[in-house]
Length: 190
Image 1: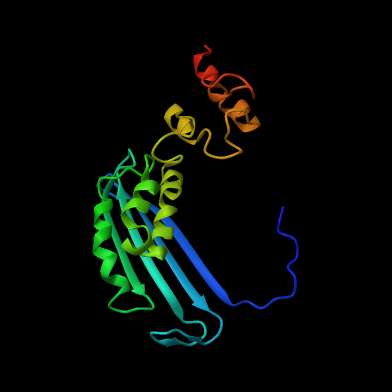
Image 2: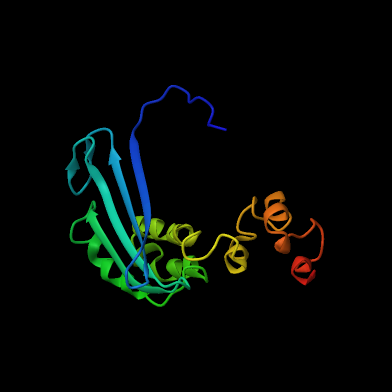
């Protein structure tokens, strides 16, 4: 169902986030992301004025992972930023993402390492979307869609994929649990 019709308004800001997944020839996977911000009016920023339609922010990330979601390479760039010489100072620090796992505590580790003044808010927002983009990159390509490990990874990640949901009951019955039953009951049934 689409959104309801909007009230009369004028556009002021455009943020675009693009995430793409690639399989490399060496067996790794690259998840690349770009975040851009632009104003629809001349924007008198404290560091430099920007004409309407020009970018205020342009951040890029490339996270390279193996088939187990382990980060093997990490690269970020701050191509357009409000404070030249300041914003990009933290860019090299993001190399410390190497060794983290996208599906085991990644967002918590990201906040601990790069939260607040230790990182860039915009790069962090972009990186926070990388785990689900990686999962979508793997879905149906790295593992079959009915792979138990793949299915187990998505059960209980959202309302539609909760153990007591109709989609889980219909398509992944081994993971289904009657609402109100004891946790783990589905996996003990034969």
